[in-house]
Length: 326
Image (cartoon, rainbow, N blue to C red; front, side, top):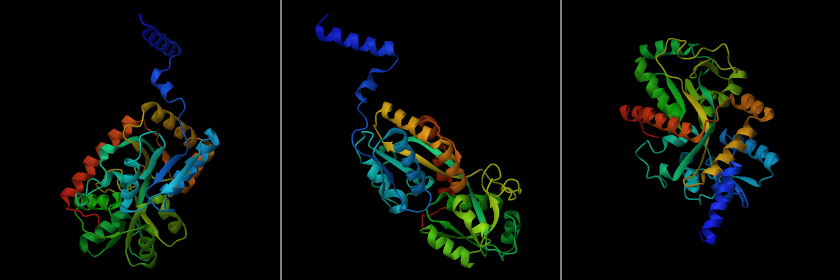
Protein backbone atom coordinates (compact mmCIF):
# COMPACT_ATOMS: atom_id res chain seq x y z
CA UNK A 1 0.00 0.00 0.00
CA UNK A 2 1.35 3.46 -0.91
CA UNK A 3 2.05 6.07 1.73
CA UNK A 4 -0.74 8.33 0.43
CA UNK A 5 -3.21 5.46 0.32
CA UNK A 6 -2.25 4.37 3.84
CA UNK A 7 -2.75 7.92 5.14
CA UNK A 8 -6.19 8.13 3.52
CA UNK A 9 -7.24 4.85 5.11
CA UNK A 10 -5.98 5.95 8.51
CA UNK A 11 -7.79 9.31 8.21
CA UNK A 12 -11.02 7.62 7.18
CA UNK A 13 -10.76 5.11 9.99
CA UNK A 14 -10.16 7.85 12.52
CA UNK A 15 -13.18 9.82 11.32
CA UNK A 16 -15.34 6.70 11.48
CA UNK A 17 -14.10 5.84 14.96
CA UNK A 18 -15.08 9.30 16.15
CA UNK A 19 -18.52 8.99 14.53
CA UNK A 20 -17.96 12.14 12.46
CA UNK A 21 -18.18 12.16 8.65
CA UNK A 22 -14.86 13.04 7.08
CA UNK A 23 -16.57 15.86 5.13
CA UNK A 24 -17.13 17.75 8.39
CA UNK A 25 -13.37 18.20 8.71
CA UNK A 26 -13.39 20.21 5.50
CA UNK A 27 -15.84 22.65 7.11
CA UNK A 28 -14.17 22.84 10.51
CA UNK A 29 -12.98 26.40 9.86
CA UNK A 30 -16.47 27.69 8.98
CA UNK A 31 -17.54 30.42 9.28
CA UNK A 32 -14.85 32.55 7.72
CA UNK A 33 -15.55 36.27 8.00
CA UNK A 34 -18.99 37.85 8.18
CA UNK A 35 -22.24 35.93 7.81
CA UNK A 36 -24.99 37.80 5.97
CA UNK A 37 -28.71 37.46 6.62
CA UNK A 38 -30.33 38.88 3.48
CA UNK A 39 -33.82 40.24 4.18
CA UNK A 40 -35.67 41.03 0.92
CA UNK A 41 -37.79 43.74 2.55
CA UNK A 42 -37.13 47.15 4.11
CA UNK A 43 -36.88 47.59 7.90
CA UNK A 44 -40.25 47.30 9.59
CA UNK A 45 -42.93 44.73 8.89
CA UNK A 46 -42.22 41.32 10.39
CA UNK A 47 -39.38 39.66 8.45
CA UNK A 48 -36.76 42.27 9.36
CA UNK A 49 -37.31 42.20 13.15
CA UNK A 50 -37.49 38.40 13.14
CA UNK A 51 -34.15 38.23 11.35
CA UNK A 52 -32.60 40.71 13.79
CA UNK A 53 -33.88 38.87 16.87
CA UNK A 54 -32.32 35.64 15.56
CA UNK A 55 -29.12 37.49 14.61
CA UNK A 56 -28.72 38.86 18.13
CA UNK A 57 -29.25 35.49 19.82
CA UNK A 58 -26.95 33.66 17.37
CA UNK A 59 -24.21 36.21 18.02
CA UNK A 60 -24.72 35.81 21.76
CA UNK A 61 -24.59 32.01 21.53
CA UNK A 62 -21.77 31.55 19.01
CA UNK A 63 -19.78 34.77 18.79
CA UNK A 64 -20.25 34.79 15.01
CA UNK A 65 -20.15 38.11 13.19
CA UNK A 66 -23.60 38.32 11.57
CA UNK A 67 -25.09 41.29 9.74
CA UNK A 68 -28.61 41.81 8.40
CA UNK A 69 -28.69 43.27 4.90
CA UNK A 70 -32.01 44.67 3.68
CA UNK A 71 -32.41 44.22 -0.09
CA UNK A 72 -36.01 45.30 -0.81
CA UNK A 73 -37.76 45.38 -4.15
CA UNK A 74 -40.12 43.39 -6.35
CA UNK A 75 -42.06 41.68 -3.52
CA UNK A 76 -38.86 40.08 -2.30
CA UNK A 77 -37.44 39.26 -5.73
CA UNK A 78 -34.42 41.57 -5.49
CA UNK A 79 -33.17 40.14 -2.21
CA UNK A 80 -33.86 36.57 -3.26
CA UNK A 81 -31.76 37.12 -6.39
CA UNK A 82 -28.89 38.51 -4.30
CA UNK A 83 -28.89 35.37 -2.16
CA UNK A 84 -29.35 33.01 -5.11
CA UNK A 85 -26.32 34.45 -6.90
CA UNK A 86 -24.07 34.44 -3.81
CA UNK A 87 -21.32 31.83 -3.36
CA UNK A 88 -22.59 28.69 -1.59
CA UNK A 89 -19.99 28.98 1.15
CA UNK A 90 -22.28 29.30 4.16
CA UNK A 91 -21.79 33.03 4.51
CA UNK A 92 -25.11 34.05 2.91
CA UNK A 93 -28.59 33.13 4.16
CA UNK A 94 -31.98 34.41 3.03
CA UNK A 95 -34.75 35.15 5.56
CA UNK A 96 -38.12 35.21 3.77
CA UNK A 97 -41.83 35.76 4.24
CA UNK A 98 -44.36 33.34 2.72
CA UNK A 99 -44.79 35.39 -0.46
CA UNK A 100 -41.31 34.22 -1.54
CA UNK A 101 -42.68 30.90 -2.81
CA UNK A 102 -45.36 32.69 -4.87
CA UNK A 103 -42.97 34.72 -7.01
CA UNK A 104 -42.40 31.93 -9.52
CA UNK A 105 -46.14 31.16 -9.79
CA UNK A 106 -47.52 34.34 -11.28
CA UNK A 107 -46.14 33.78 -14.77
CA UNK A 108 -45.82 37.50 -15.45
CA UNK A 109 -42.32 38.18 -14.14
CA UNK A 110 -38.97 37.40 -15.66
CA UNK A 111 -37.31 36.48 -12.39
CA UNK A 112 -33.55 37.11 -12.13
CA UNK A 113 -33.13 33.77 -10.38
CA UNK A 114 -34.55 30.24 -10.45
CA UNK A 115 -36.11 28.35 -7.55
CA UNK A 116 -33.42 25.72 -8.04
CA UNK A 117 -30.73 28.29 -7.18
CA UNK A 118 -31.98 28.43 -3.60
CA UNK A 119 -32.27 25.55 -1.16
CA UNK A 120 -34.87 25.35 1.59
CA UNK A 121 -33.33 25.21 5.06
CA UNK A 122 -36.23 25.57 7.50
CA UNK A 123 -39.45 27.33 8.36
CA UNK A 124 -38.96 29.43 11.48
CA UNK A 125 -42.61 29.56 12.40
CA UNK A 126 -46.10 30.46 11.30
CA UNK A 127 -49.05 32.65 12.30
CA UNK A 128 -52.66 32.66 11.23
CA UNK A 129 -53.98 35.51 9.12
CA UNK A 130 -56.88 37.68 10.14
CA UNK A 131 -59.78 39.34 8.35
CA UNK A 132 -60.93 42.59 9.91
CA UNK A 133 -63.76 45.00 9.16
CA UNK A 134 -64.03 48.74 9.70
CA UNK A 135 -65.80 49.09 13.07
CA UNK A 136 -69.01 50.66 11.72
CA UNK A 137 -69.66 47.92 9.16
CA UNK A 138 -72.79 45.89 10.03
CA UNK A 139 -71.18 42.43 10.10
CA UNK A 140 -69.45 41.03 13.18
CA UNK A 141 -68.38 37.67 11.76
CA UNK A 142 -66.98 36.48 8.46
CA UNK A 143 -70.14 34.39 7.95
CA UNK A 144 -72.31 37.51 8.31
CA UNK A 145 -70.09 39.30 5.80
CA UNK A 146 -70.46 36.43 3.32
CA UNK A 147 -74.26 36.71 3.59
CA UNK A 148 -74.03 40.45 2.88
CA UNK A 149 -71.65 39.87 -0.04
CA UNK A 150 -74.00 37.34 -1.62
CA UNK A 151 -76.80 39.90 -1.46
CA UNK A 152 -74.69 42.56 -3.21
CA UNK A 153 -71.91 40.89 -5.24
CA UNK A 154 -68.74 42.95 -5.58
CA UNK A 155 -69.88 45.80 -3.34
CA UNK A 156 -67.84 44.92 -0.25
CA UNK A 157 -64.18 45.83 -0.67
CA UNK A 158 -61.19 44.11 0.89
CA UNK A 159 -57.57 45.26 0.97
CA UNK A 160 -54.73 42.76 0.69
CA UNK A 161 -51.06 42.98 -0.17
CA UNK A 162 -50.41 42.50 -3.87
CA UNK A 163 -48.80 39.20 -4.88
CA UNK A 164 -49.45 37.84 -1.40
CA UNK A 165 -50.94 34.69 0.04
CA UNK A 166 -53.79 36.82 1.37
CA UNK A 167 -54.74 37.87 -2.16
CA UNK A 168 -54.75 34.27 -3.34
CA UNK A 169 -56.57 32.93 -0.29
CA UNK A 170 -59.34 35.49 -0.75
CA UNK A 171 -59.87 34.28 -4.32
CA UNK A 172 -59.96 30.68 -3.10
CA UNK A 173 -62.51 31.24 -0.33
CA UNK A 174 -64.78 33.32 -2.59
CA UNK A 175 -64.92 30.60 -5.22
CA UNK A 176 -65.46 27.83 -2.67
CA UNK A 177 -68.33 29.68 -0.99
CA UNK A 178 -69.99 31.43 -3.94
CA UNK A 179 -69.64 35.09 -3.10
CA UNK A 180 -67.82 38.04 -4.66
CA UNK A 181 -65.70 40.78 -3.07
CA UNK A 182 -63.94 43.76 -4.61
CA UNK A 183 -60.33 42.82 -3.81
CA UNK A 184 -57.94 45.79 -3.84
CA UNK A 185 -54.22 44.87 -3.98
CA UNK A 186 -51.78 47.17 -2.16
CA UNK A 187 -48.04 47.60 -2.67
CA UNK A 188 -47.33 47.74 1.06
CA UNK A 189 -48.76 47.49 4.55
CA UNK A 190 -48.58 51.25 5.09
CA UNK A 191 -51.11 52.26 2.42
CA UNK A 192 -53.21 49.17 3.11
CA UNK A 193 -53.72 50.14 6.75
CA UNK A 194 -54.10 53.81 5.93
CA UNK A 195 -57.18 52.96 3.88
CA UNK A 196 -58.40 50.26 6.28
CA UNK A 197 -58.25 52.59 9.29
CA UNK A 198 -59.98 55.37 7.37
CA UNK A 199 -62.82 53.12 6.25
CA UNK A 200 -61.87 53.44 2.58
CA UNK A 201 -62.02 49.63 2.39
CA UNK A 202 -64.66 47.59 4.20
CA UNK A 203 -62.29 44.74 5.02
CA UNK A 204 -58.57 44.06 5.27
CA UNK A 205 -56.62 40.82 5.43
CA UNK A 206 -53.06 40.52 6.77
CA UNK A 207 -51.12 38.53 9.33
CA UNK A 208 -52.65 38.73 12.79
CA UNK A 209 -49.34 40.03 14.12
CA UNK A 210 -49.67 43.22 12.06
CA UNK A 211 -53.42 43.54 12.54
CA UNK A 212 -53.88 43.06 16.30
CA UNK A 213 -52.57 46.45 17.48
CA UNK A 214 -55.31 48.12 15.43
CA UNK A 215 -57.91 45.63 16.67
CA UNK A 216 -56.84 46.12 20.29
CA UNK A 217 -57.14 49.88 19.84
CA UNK A 218 -60.71 49.47 18.56
CA UNK A 219 -59.82 50.86 15.14
CA UNK A 220 -60.59 47.58 13.34
CA UNK A 221 -63.01 44.74 14.11
CA UNK A 222 -61.64 41.20 13.74
CA UNK A 223 -64.28 38.96 12.14
CA UNK A 224 -62.35 35.77 11.39
CA UNK A 225 -58.99 33.98 11.48
CA UNK A 226 -57.60 31.56 8.91
CA UNK A 227 -55.74 29.10 11.13
CA UNK A 228 -56.72 25.61 12.22
CA UNK A 229 -57.52 26.88 15.73
CA UNK A 230 -58.33 30.15 17.42
CA UNK A 231 -55.52 32.58 18.06
CA UNK A 232 -54.29 33.25 21.57
CA UNK A 233 -54.34 36.93 20.60
CA UNK A 234 -58.09 36.79 19.91
CA UNK A 235 -59.58 33.70 21.58
CA UNK A 236 -63.15 34.96 21.17
CA UNK A 237 -62.90 35.15 17.37
CA UNK A 238 -63.85 31.95 15.54
CA UNK A 239 -61.89 30.44 12.68
CA UNK A 240 -63.50 30.51 9.24
CA UNK A 241 -64.13 26.77 9.45
CA UNK A 242 -65.88 27.17 12.80
CA UNK A 243 -68.13 29.72 11.14
CA UNK A 244 -69.25 27.19 8.54
CA UNK A 245 -67.09 28.57 5.74
CA UNK A 246 -65.62 26.15 3.21
CA UNK A 247 -61.91 26.80 3.70
CA UNK A 248 -58.51 25.33 4.49
CA UNK A 249 -56.10 26.51 7.20
CA UNK A 250 -53.85 29.27 5.89
CA UNK A 251 -50.87 30.84 7.62
CA UNK A 252 -48.35 33.57 7.25
CA UNK A 253 -44.88 32.08 7.77
CA UNK A 254 -41.19 32.93 7.82
CA UNK A 255 -38.38 30.75 6.51
CA UNK A 256 -34.66 30.39 5.83
CA UNK A 257 -33.00 29.60 2.49
CA UNK A 258 -29.38 29.29 1.37
CA UNK A 259 -27.69 29.37 -2.03
CA UNK A 260 -28.01 25.95 -3.68
CA UNK A 261 -24.89 23.88 -3.15
CA UNK A 262 -24.17 25.13 0.35
CA UNK A 263 -22.41 22.14 2.03
CA UNK A 264 -24.71 19.93 4.07
CA UNK A 265 -22.56 20.07 7.24
CA UNK A 266 -22.77 23.86 7.20
CA UNK A 267 -26.54 23.80 6.64
CA UNK A 268 -26.94 21.33 9.50
CA UNK A 269 -24.81 23.46 11.82
CA UNK A 270 -26.71 26.64 10.99
CA UNK A 271 -30.04 24.84 11.37
CA UNK A 272 -29.00 23.56 14.79
CA UNK A 273 -27.88 27.01 15.91
CA UNK A 274 -31.05 28.70 14.60
CA UNK A 275 -33.11 26.09 16.42
CA UNK A 276 -31.22 26.73 19.64
CA UNK A 277 -31.65 30.49 19.23
CA UNK A 278 -35.35 30.42 18.35
CA UNK A 279 -36.21 27.97 21.13
CA UNK A 280 -34.42 30.09 23.75
CA UNK A 281 -37.22 31.13 26.17
CA UNK A 282 -36.67 34.86 25.69
CA UNK A 283 -36.73 34.60 21.89
CA UNK A 284 -39.75 32.30 21.82
CA UNK A 285 -41.63 34.71 24.06
CA UNK A 286 -40.83 37.63 21.76
CA UNK A 287 -42.07 35.68 18.75
CA UNK A 288 -45.29 34.70 20.52
CA UNK A 289 -45.98 38.18 21.91
CA UNK A 290 -45.01 40.19 18.82
CA UNK A 291 -45.98 37.88 15.97
CA UNK A 292 -48.41 35.31 17.42
CA UNK A 293 -45.89 32.80 16.07
CA UNK A 294 -46.03 29.04 16.41
CA UNK A 295 -42.42 27.79 16.23
CA UNK A 296 -42.05 24.96 13.69
CA UNK A 297 -38.39 24.44 12.57
CA UNK A 298 -38.80 21.42 10.23
CA UNK A 299 -35.66 19.86 8.68
CA UNK A 300 -34.79 20.88 5.10
CA UNK A 301 -36.49 17.92 3.39
CA UNK A 302 -39.78 18.49 5.22
CA UNK A 303 -39.66 22.23 4.56
CA UNK A 304 -38.98 21.62 0.86
CA UNK A 305 -41.92 19.19 0.70
CA UNK A 306 -44.18 21.76 2.38
CA UNK A 307 -43.11 24.44 -0.12
CA UNK A 308 -43.77 22.14 -3.08
CA UNK A 309 -47.25 21.31 -1.77
CA UNK A 310 -48.07 24.99 -1.17
CA UNK A 311 -46.86 25.98 -4.64
CA UNK A 312 -49.02 23.29 -6.22
CA UNK A 313 -52.13 24.35 -4.27
CA UNK A 314 -51.83 28.13 -4.67
CA UNK A 315 -50.53 27.88 -8.23
CA UNK A 316 -53.78 26.17 -9.18
CA UNK A 317 -55.80 28.92 -7.46
CA UNK A 318 -53.87 31.58 -9.36
CA UNK A 319 -54.49 29.81 -12.66
CA UNK A 320 -58.15 28.97 -12.00
CA UNK A 321 -58.94 32.58 -11.06
CA UNK A 322 -56.64 34.29 -13.61
CA UNK A 323 -55.04 36.27 -10.79
CA UNK A 324 -52.41 38.94 -11.38
CA UNK A 325 -49.82 40.12 -8.84
CA UNK A 326 -51.01 43.71 -8.97
